[in-house]
Image 1 (tube, rainbow, N blue to C red):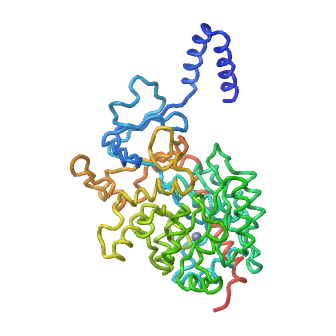
Image 2 (image 1 turned 90 degrees about the vertical axis):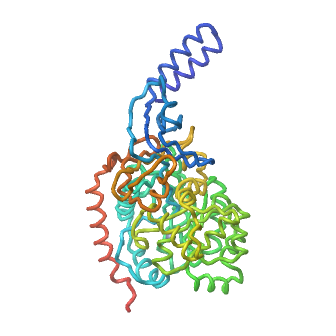
Image 3 (image 1 turned 180 degrees about the vertical axis):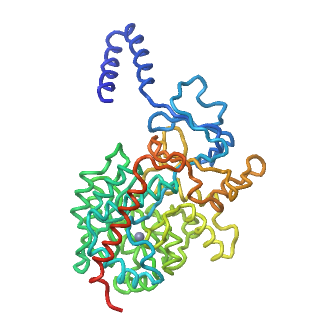
Length: 481
Ligand SMILES: [Zn+2]
């Protein structure tokens, strides 16, 4: 394509020098450029835009040129007289932006570390695993997790894992949009984690790769794992490369109290003092926080990745989501990893997030379905600094789009018009297998449930083999009961 671009600019220069010929040449080049642009229309679906006005087109279409959305609206108005290369019929289906998974860990150990509270679970299962993890395991884990996510309509993930150059390889292959924030730890007892220099090298090599689909942020595991110096360097390099910072806020009540005792400040106050809180910072969980900490997050414009399934399964507690929203803190949703969830499914996450707040506050009106859907899409995009690029279906945005079947028995009745219930059905009734087609950056990654980019059976077989080997290698490092 570079040659074509070059010729185009050469013609533009000619326009300046020879106006009359220029007009003719320019018209020829425009039509030439048009024939080189791939145009796709998704038509006759229920188009849920998630734009600022929450516009919905009950019989709507989305027009895509290459990797960008160029028009969204009622089917009658779109694409009239336009050449279209590909047509996707979305009759009986919903068309919406792909989900943004705001906190995840690629992983191998699903269902093997169960029924333990957070810190015991970390010590007994997770940290010993990290001691024996290898680069090829990271590839096996992330290929599987990204494939699983695509199959659940997740088009963007903020992933914190290890050996993330291999996660970048997997993201390139699978076709997901990924923000990679390595598990960096530097306290002496955690020296087997990623080094900050690896993180910096990853930014240099992979940030902005795959046509801008891959981003790299500065990652920090947690206050318990990282020295003060690591936070200062994270800030320094995040500023230098203009990237964000991702780390864990408090999940467990005991740890929040322990840290407060140790530092004389609550954990988010510590992060604030270390200049970690900015609009391009995402803190996972933040379950146990004081009003002062909420205020700090709101003032800094820092986003929270709420992971309700993980918080419930590890018995961590209930994050004060209603307080966050009331105070203007941006909240997205995350699945966390396969070891703590055990499913990478944002539809489930929306439902559980809603149920958890409703029952906790004994308020059925807490977190309406549309708010949950925004948390799972546009709020996540904003948290990643990608609010202008993805997260809603709007002209000029990148085409990260999912098409979801509305005709299964568990989705019936799917009603448009006066009794419109499609958003409630997506949040409370849908399952990942309702997602039929997924586009990322204008490219069809899954069509009619078939992932087109990788061999699914091979991905699963490689993951299983890597998990079995890892569990064997981990044995000597597991503390005795
Ligand atoms: Zn986590």
